[in-house]
Structures are given as structure tokens and as C-alpha cells.
Length: 520
Image (cartoon, rainbow, N blue to C red):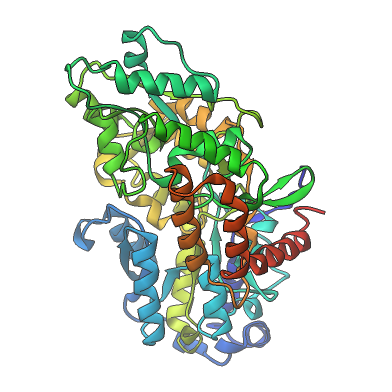
């Protein structure tokens, strides 16, 4: 499916917004123009000029955030912008969303915070988010120095009922693929598996033929995190890996939902076959956090579906080489199956983050100005370079016009992505930061994947996605472990669509996706 993209700045709306707000500090005609463009800040005059550093409390998901006094980017940005940036990063989406919900309900929201598209709609409907639409100066042209360009459709992802409620960050590239122990293949004199049946046979050998040579039956063919462990296997049947990626995609020119896909029972039967053969880590449904990575590094399994950032960075290679110097993890092309060869599914249109501003800040023009100044700066050539690579001469050097990283960046820069509010040019950034992984990055980025539409769908009122997903997960586990016969799959669907109102969800999704022109 082809799509036309209009190249615009990722935050052209915000650039306009910032320009209008800052204009409020001027006099005469500029005041009048600003007043009509942005009613919440009219007549603010000189009061919008801060006399001391402005504290901005920012909340998002992430790991590796240092203490404020050790945060080199915070120091640089604070000095440049006259801010006191206070970031709070929470590791998991579930914990983050729960804590944000408590703060929002208590009227103690951060000044700038990450939201999912579902929560964005809920908070917008409750009047808790600042509607950015009235601030737009449509006559303002995009800044020529803005470095991260996005398709104009991305702004639709931050829209509720025609109004913009969040700042979108451009999407990431796909990172995941199957990884396999090549040294185990070599030891057992096996070839790289190319089909799902060959994958099963290799997994059996990894389980039964003592590939680590310790004379113990302590290895499994495959491990992973819940059903994402089987993403390329599901892809071989033309199905997305439901819970970790999404459920809506096109098939034969029509919208398909993974649970309603006619191929799903067949795919579940094959996964059941793998589990019955005892080649799958029995803890795949309860693995948490870094446990999958640790099992892979410790030689507990020989095949894993994982992002290259978790296994192929230099420091990751050093970790597993420390455990076993002979270990050699390599990317494995997705196995072929009845529907072809798909390395799972990916939502190419999905913003990697949405950042919202509370409605309460429309009464605080000083802080609001500073938020837009911050966003605009990290979106400019100078600011975006800073939040990608750090300080020139310290974290990187320029050699013949190209960025060359220093060792200090690896030590101090693991959290820099948190400041990349509107994104980055992924190809340029990744090739500069991970030169040793260039081929690996390209492998993951170019793999064929099922194209998802989930970022275009906001669940309708009356449908509880969390409850539906919980039920679906429980029942699919029963199917693949043989606790419920796959012949009852149609009964499962009836309950999902009836009791859990999934039909309401799929009907709303089809309407929304058609309105956006993603399918006819």
C-alpha cells in the first residue's frame, strides 16, 4: 500500500506556538497579533519574561537516568535555556501509567509528560490537557534548521476530535529479530533454519543434544517474552504478535484483526507443537524485564526474539562473551511459513512518544513559554545534535564533517534519548552512535514486517482493552499448552466479542482507519 507523505517539521505547530507566545513579550501590533493567535496568554506583556531559572517537571518512561547533579545534558540545557529541568523516568509503561493517573486525578500533573494515545483521549475528554490548536500560527513557516522531519500524518496521532493535544516524537526503526547461537549450530553440524519446520528441528537439537557440552539437559531451543517470543513464527502465518505489537493490519485489501484472522488457529497449533516438543522455555509467559536477555547470555536457550540493542551493542557482546568466550549470537532471518516470511509486525506510523501539557499551564505563561522554548531548541539543528551526541569535544568529535563518538558517550549518554522530545534522524544517529552494528541495524530495519495500524485507533467508550487483553492472553495460553482444545477457538471469539465487547472495538477501529485513508 502506497501512501503520500507531506514533509513538514515534526513540531511545526509548536514552533508556531512558541513564536506566538514569545511575541507576547513585545508591544504594539505584535501584542495584538499574539492576542488573537493565543488567547490564553493575551495581555501577559513583560510578565512572561522569567527572572530566574524556570523549573520544568517532566515525566516519561525510561531507564538509566542519572541523578540531576550527574546529568550532563541537564546542565547544558539549563545553562542554554534558563531552566531547571527535572526529569522523572519510570521503567515500565504499566507503572508509569498508574503513577501518572494518580497525579492527574490529584491535580498534581507534571508540566510536560508522556501519554499513550488511549490516555491522551481520556485526559483530553476530561479537560485535563492543553489544547494546542488555538496557539497555532498558520502563517509561520517551518524553521529551516529543524532536523527531524515527519510525515504530516503523524500529527493526526496527537489529535482528539480535531484538536491537537500532544507533541509527537518521530517513530523508531524496527529493532527486533530472531537471534540464534551460531556456535551451537556449528557444533551440532546444523544449517541455519529457513522454514518454521526447520526452526522446530533446530530447537529440538538445541534442547536434546547438549549444545553447551556440559553433559546436562539444561538448555531450551527458544526463549522470549510472552507471545513476542514467537513473533516471526506468527508472521509466517501472516499474523501479528498481538499483545506486544498490535492487532490491526491489512489483508487482501481489508482490515484484519489478529484474533479474527482465519490463520490464527493454525498458528496456535504450531506453537502448541513447539511447546509439546519441550523446546520452549517453560517460563516464557512469566519472564520479566531483563530475564530473557540473561537466559540468552547464560546459555539457557539458543534462539531468542530480541532487539539488537539488547544483544548486539559492544557492551552486550562483552557481557555474554565473559560468560562463554565461544558464544556467537547472530541474526536469523524470519522463517518461511504458509503466509510467507514476516519478521513479526511493526507500526511504522506510530510516534515513539507523545508528550502532553496540562491545561492548568495556560494560566502560567512564563512556564508555558519555557516549555515551548525547550521543545523548539531540542528540535533545532544545534539542540538536536546536543541531545543526540552530547557535548562536542567531550562526547563526540567531528572528523571530516562526520560525527565520531568518544568512550565518554557510552558512559554518560545512555539516557540522552529522553531529551529527544521530537525525535531524531534515525539513520544518521544510529550509524554514528553504533558504527560496529551498522549491518545489524540494517538487517532489522529492512526485514519484511506486517504493517500495523494500531496507532490510528483509539478504543471506544464502553470497551475495556485491558480486560479484553487479559482474557485473550489467558485463553491463548490455554490453547498453546493444550489446556483447551483449539477446536474451541470460535467459542473463545464469541466470548471475546460478546462478553468483552471486542466487536465494539473492531468496528470502531475500522471506522477510524478508513477515515484516515489507511484502507478503503
